Image 1 (cartoon, helix red, strand yellow):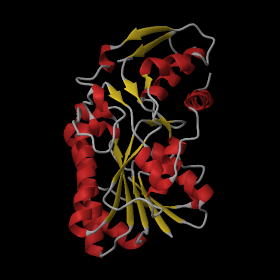
Image 2 (image 1 turned 90 degrees about the vertical axis):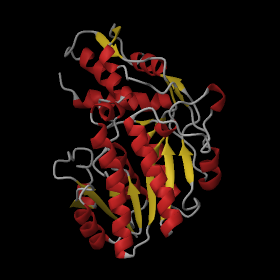
Image 3 (image 1 turned 90 degrees about the horizontal axis):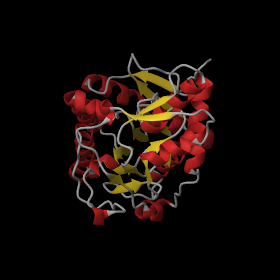
Image 4 (image 1 turned 135 degrees about the vertical axis):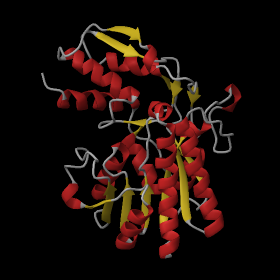
Length: 321
């Protein structure tokens, strides 16, 4: 089986590569990367896969790569995935996420290939969720509150449309927040953990700067999430359908901070940073995962406390005295 991961050098992509190499060594694994992509997330396993340079925004580049690989499965994880960046560069987020995916679909049509495709969509698509709509089912209205969320709605709906119009074997997964080691330090759990470790090592004053601590999020360990991605293409999910992948448990951002502070003996003050507040924020994202569990038998196995401990230990290993 030939498997292609877009975004393989990223956070989830690197963990998915780890999962496949460990549990499915029979797979021929391919990944695409941009010339400026950082590769530290996959340096430990680069010799066990084939990496091919490709710019998803360049249709001819995508066509060339798919003609060469002819994948049986595609995990489409590449995206501009940081919500605040989409406020600063909305056009870039929309073009990267939507046009890049259309180029994949159109190349497959031209080559007359129909692999199974997992689209890594997002719980951010649900946006403004009303109090009586939690836990959030796949049938909930989409009310996106950021340019990033709009771009993911576009990807999501294009997956549905190309399945209905052309029969592409697309499975849409709406992943709720996932975190773990290697998460970029612009994301909340990793950002808090890095600030704590820098304080421990005397690299910053004993103050953590925070944004909205009242937002509620459903966190899944990335290692559980990528197992869900794999299972979504194992023949039990229906093409064209959408599935939530979530832990089914909600935490406030303050809960996250308190748990991380519990891993250190250093006294730390908390200060609100207005630059970390968004023009509009999703108040709660709590997913109903029953549909995906019924289809695949997937369940999260790594406790959130362990996830956070692994994140702070990751930064302790990376930041030197």
